[in-house]
Image 1 (tube, one colour):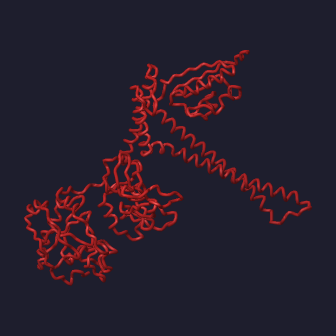
Image 2: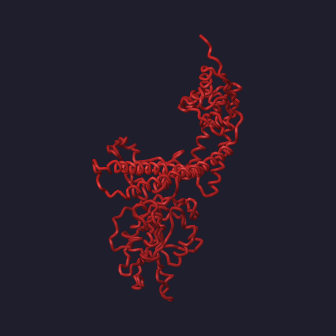
Image 3: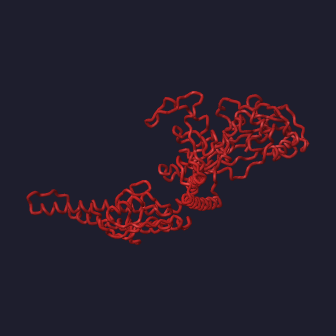
Length: 570
């Protein structure tokens, strides 16, 4: 067997800064055919490319990585089999910083955006010229059919063919213009894409996982299902990889710190408890369970158009079919269907149960004061549907994400009173009659004056205070009923703690120690009918220090005072 004559020397070099390069060969020679085979790369399917600026071959996606020795050895075998002398020079320790690599990527993206904009403009210009040429031909074509056998037949057919070619070329160039415009837009947003905090958090999670794997390999342990060499050369390679990963983590953590300085919130398990509400982009959903990397919430598959979804809204989907797929739930006590897990990087807003109840109780402002809903604006056009007061759309149910945790927290509450508020069971009552207050459902609603004598609600305007009687009537010494309102309270049944004078009730309810995150005290002079509109609840004595400081001795009996005719005046 005769040996293949030597054809020259080809050098294969690799550094982390420059990637894998092949020098000593030209674009169209025999070695170029070997380099263009789609057999290389870490996962295969890649071919070497000719770099016009470098004037040599390079392997795509090989920069800022360790040498792919499998590819290098494979290429070396092919070239030596073809008669070339191959020299290999690999230096995995020479690298550029991660910040320099990121800066170059952004710079190259800006250059691509400018270049693609030029491609799109040229294609749009060619499309416009082709359409003008087609229109120029159609101007003198009056729709007369082709006269077969006439001397104008050949010219007529030629003009139709020319017009068809111009139109097809115009359509094709229009598609090209749209394609390059999209590529330019993607390149322009490359920096924002790389600096997106949520994507950066996911990137950080992968980098930390990679760091843990490298440290296991350095200790001789298995990670990702295999072990790495612990020879001096292998440990040096692992040390370099560890330094690279640590540098990436430091850079990405700086990106997150900058985003937090701008107001970005990094969510975690400590920010949520069962019963809170999260917003992932358009719906408030109750937190059913807090996990290490996510929260479990009700699914939205069958509840589109709802601004708030609670645990009680869930339904067992056993035996049902959605979009051609049967539900995997089998039913029973351990049914967890109709739920979804949201990773913390998908959370856009947080609210407590009291915050959601307050939003739902708020009446939307007049249509002239609303805004265009960002969710249904394509259908609604310029119609103003989004209520800023409620933070929700009045038609499609879109709820804007909002972080109530960033707002000032209310005054701390007494532990004993909070326990009383939480242990008091809610009372189920039938829906109020039509002639009741739309805000507090009290029977003291005046249908003519459109005003409630209990909560002073006046639709169409801001709630107005109750009219003060004339001086000398002893209004401050009149009797009032102090009520407790908590998250478990239903509007159709008020819970009374004490009876005292109006002056004393104002002092008690105005004290910051009598309100907390889950309850508050309020008072009224006309509570309605005992047993129907309100009821007495036990007093556990947690607020006795407040009463003692104010010098108030409350009573536990109520005598309804005669209602003055001026109570609903105005």
